[in-house]
Length: 505
Image (cartoon, rainbow, N blue to C red; front, side):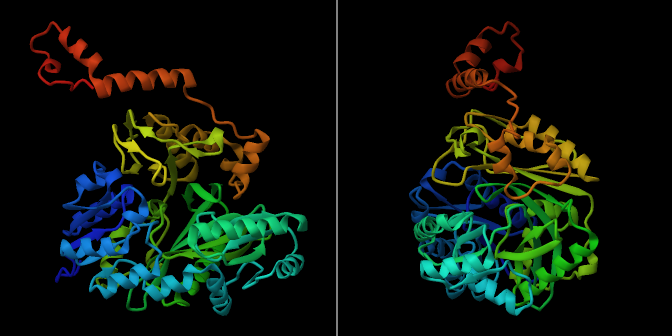
């Protein structure tokens, strides 16, 4: 921070691992933190780690983490100077950013105008075309079914129908032939309206075997703006990322330079500052890339960029929001080694990746050189249906890609979770696949591989054994019945287990 220490206290308008990540950054900067929580999160780790905590309301996000008035009231009540939105929830809500500033607080992120300009997919594509950034062939502002039919014929099937507002794979439909178009438009509109309150759609060419490559950009309020290289994000399910890595195994130095320049140009077109991400679709056959969208916030996968560049993105978010100049130029940054992130979800890959809920009977994170875990859960935590089922982000860093893959495989084997179903075995199968080793995983690879049976997770334990372990852990950890019996049978009077009730658990 600057010597005047402009922020003394920051309210974190989020929960879970990202709230904890921000708390840790604030601690290193000497800034106090305020956590907010819902009734479902009253015992959560982020609440325990913050200097203060404010209850917002019931578990439903609209009553808590999405309630703008309650968040600003909490910041005012605790005399916070600024609000950090994290990712998700209100992080890309222009009205929230404007409301924070109107309340005399600092929004730790871009301006409301920049969020608004890039938050609408249709409008952002128009802005990118004006800025000379390559965009996926398509059309915006269509209304009638006939207009969509003419556009689809001009583009050529397959096409993608998607919501103009929002993201996360919602309001998206792939259309392979004209007979599917009407149903796709109706379904996408309905989902877009339910998810974002906005039924507007756009149509564009669907690139079936493309890769999803994004560039981290960073700028200050003084006009300085750089990129911090790419992240390969093609391992996805339901249009949502599972595994990310950097550097991308596909990019040549020349392509990296071209895409980096395009990312900076895209951000400059909307006078962007703070952290953001320019997402591209990349066709490896033609070595062609197109602008996809911009995320006007910190990304879930930001840790891998931190590991290869050596910069703390969250701390610099705070420092830039406070008015500091970003003291680095593009030539100051280099990619060092290779980093991979696996998102550990409470979900069942064998059942359409449906979320799994329950109490974490055992949650043991891996450790070791080059291993980092960002999580908001511990043994005994409840995984509810109210929020995203992300349990942890497992991140590794090594000298090259093959070493990073091996380190991640070992770390996944050491990650122990009982009480809910997870995707750990699934990610092991992905990492062990020859296509992943060769960098051939496109955005539809998971879907196609599972349909063909070419991707089958190897279970570390049978379902029957997992159930037995869960039952035993529930008995031991939460009733103490077995540990009490074991302690009472100890014959050594000096045994430390006899001195501490239930500590054996």
